[in-house]
Length: 313
Image (cartoon, rainbow, N blue to C red):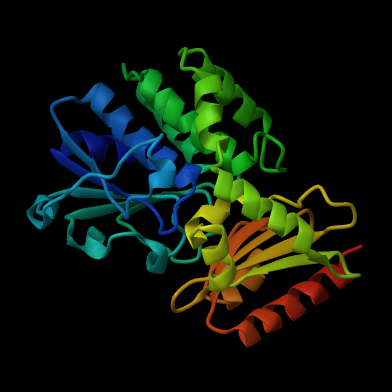
């Protein structure tokens, strides 16, 4: 499959790379890293990345402004997205061919070519594997490719702490480091927080509730976000704020937006992605996202998480 994907990349003059909505470092890192990998080997091609721009990830890359006509006869590659409903920028349907590259448990089988590897720590790690195949035929990469892919791996492994970290992950981390990008500079950008965000993190730590089952939760209504001068997207960087709390098995952030409540689920053991799927979401067994549309529905999801944790020894 990797050879087939490389063959299609070589075939097309225009390539447009998508990822999922509400991006994380792996979504942007794999997307932008793949763009730079293609350009390192084919500087004559037009390669774009698309999706809603997020200032949070400007340290990695900014999205391109792509006219609709660029999709004519274009190859579309969708990174890090298990189901079509979560693809950012619906114009992916306008390309001539679609390729899926993802490491999540498959929700929607899609794409003319589909490469899904749930054993990979991240889609960024999969792009490393794609480079490995490319290297067999004279392919190359550079410092910028390495920086982006390393950020994606670090993001999805929680700095190599999560169970999805394997010997292969460390192998590729070592290979990426060899290129010479500045890890301190990258880490500073990844984990830097504004004063407002630090203050709401303190609020979260003071208000978190832990149920006897080991399920923990925090509710952040719009009023609270406004008081601390942060938006819903910014809270993604503090989702693990109380992950080291003694007795916690799994936890959930409920973050209110204009028309919905964003749900961020994390776990140290209980499987949570099935729960997320039941609430308009999905993801990994230990890290998922979902959506509810009222605080009553949020309480219902919390009850189910409580039940899941109660059954986990």
